Amino acid sequence: MNFSDIAYCSDKYQYTMGKSFYESGRKDLMSVFNLFYRVAPENNNWAVVSGTEEVIEMVLSMGGKPESFFEKFLPGDEYAEFRKYLANMRFTGNVYAMKEGEIAFPNQPIVIVEAPLIEAQVLETPMLCIMNHQMAVATKASRVCRSTNRAVSEFGSRRAHGPWAATYGAKAAIIAGCAGTSNVLTGSYFGCGSTGTMAHSYVTTFGCSVKGEFEAFDTYIKTHRGEGLILLIDTYDTLHCGIKNAIKAFRANGIDDSYPQGYGVRLDSGDLAYLSVECRKILDSQGLKNCKIFATNSLDEYLISDLERQGAAIDCYGVGDAIATSKANPCFGNVYKLVQIGSQAVLKRSEDKVKLINPGFQITYRILRHDAEKGDVFKVDVTCLRGDELSRKIEAGEEFTVYDEYDRYKYKTFTPGSYTAIPLQIPAIVNGERVAPHRNLDQKRKYYKDTLMHFSPSERRLINPHYYKVDISDDLAAKKLEIINRLVKEIKEFEME
Image (cartoon, rainbow, N blue to C red):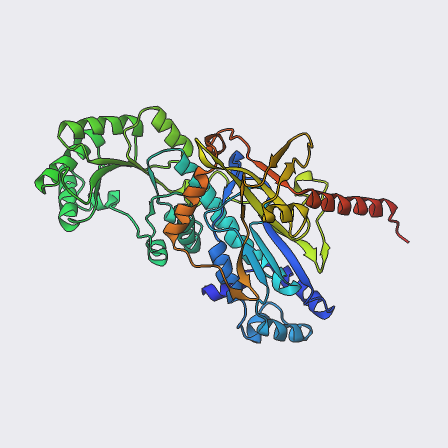
């Protein structure tokens, strides 16, 4: 699949709706759609944004297909005119998006599309496909990386749900804190490099023997001198031959603590806490104090936390399927909902309270205060209708008060000069042209790490995090209530004639 095809990785009903919009004269009616999620996975307080770069590329790639392309899924004379329209359709609207590496809370617009109705509608499926995958991986990677102060590398390509998922999932994992990835395509596409040493099969190709294990290590060092050297020591017996053969091979090749590229051993099975401690003792007793111990083997944030509680002597973790598939919560819950048509704010009402959405064209501000001891601290996020009273006050730096949507006794007041407001949805595409600056992967990872540190430690913890204050403006709350009350009244009065 070419990247130019991704805009058409869609559900057919996007196009059956589009035909109705086209033939009823509604195709050019301006619409606003929000992409957001309702509940963070695994009792998280928040999620990590990844995928907006691919969304921008996908949106701008839409168009340029011949009519014959659309005939494959919209056959028949009744679609002929619509196919001609689609063949010439390009995206002409605006996209506002959170930066990759941003921390997003439930119900906040992560991507806002403001465009003619057909153009905006057909983007739903490919956009959700991109964002749900990458945000699932990024949010899980964030959890795993926050479980330790040691480096975590992403090694999950073989468990990922296809090559696309492996490549872009690894990218999402690096944004959310992973030190590296084993995936060579990710390294090539995003300039982050890739890491890797050996598998058990490498060791056994030298013969299934203790002598063969030494030969494997010795050969590897000789063929990779000048690189980082990590030897896999659990093929036969970690303590009785693996660690000893590694030390023997290091010594035979003059590898010691002065080796500038770094060296180490990897454990992939057994009691990692016990084995790492015993290996550390042996290595230190032999003067190899800088020899690092790497650990893999179906790890996740809970196992890593437990290993560290046990005092494991592990310097770096390699995590595979837990990150690559977001194993504990593989389906992220982003949705794409119409919030305004023309100048009219709209919403989807549901008997399920969590599915009630915020209507209208919105913007979210993150409010920051400087603390003499703690530095710059994020205090509250508030989502407003663009240009409403609260939005105008925040933009002007005036005093404002934020009230809890469901409890008016919970509020916070900010005085002039005491805060900084950061808008979270940044223009990415304006009138069909990209305006978002290009950032490399390292910049995105640094942005995530910097953003994370402005939240309190209690909001960053994995278990029972303190919930950061997230509110909406009074005007947005009033608009939502107005629409709901009107709908309820109409429904009560509705009768079939």
